[in-house]
Amino acid sequence: MKIIVDEDGDIIAKTTDDHILIGGHHRLAVAASLNRKLFWRDTGEPVKLDLFFKHHGSSLRHTA
Image 1 (tube, rainbow, N blue to C red):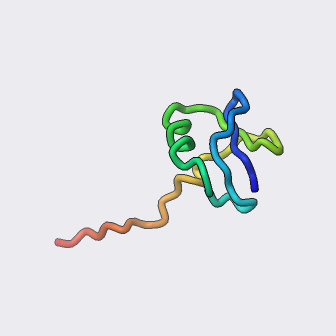
Image 2: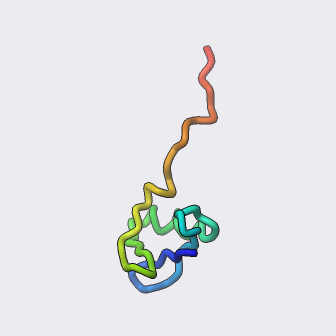
């Protein structure tokens, strides 16, 4: 398990080792919307939020 923390060291979210979000969905979204800097607790490296906010295609289909 990997832990995402903010610049104060507060836990924001938890992920599996392969970066699947398993906890803290709302806190992660709020931190992203506030442009907070987030880091991996074990390495101190910045978290790339695009890993968690990708669009895998649209579930909405446009019909005419």
